Image (tube, rainbow, N blue to C red):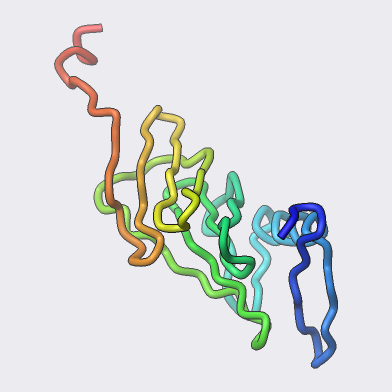
Length: 141
């Protein structure tokens, strides 16, 4: 499906509306940045820096900001936005960007600390992180 012709079906009061992709992005960014509730759920805890779209699914997005990497699934049938928090363990970072691989298996998040972290999208947990930093070298500088 071409990016310029992507549409998302959204049901409002049993009426289907077709919204172009840029309208959806503006709508989601507005809700995320203002922390507006969608269907009774708060969309962002503190703030959201980005929205990343899946390559093979029109109903899933990833978001990230201050220690809140999430995978959100858009349920068009029930007009819900289902939020799944990614288990990141001891890591607390401010996420600035995300890249999703072609198979939609991993999401690679980048932080302001320079870390790149791979999250498993299907299981919502941390898979790999790097680069490994030499703590002794950092303290001597």
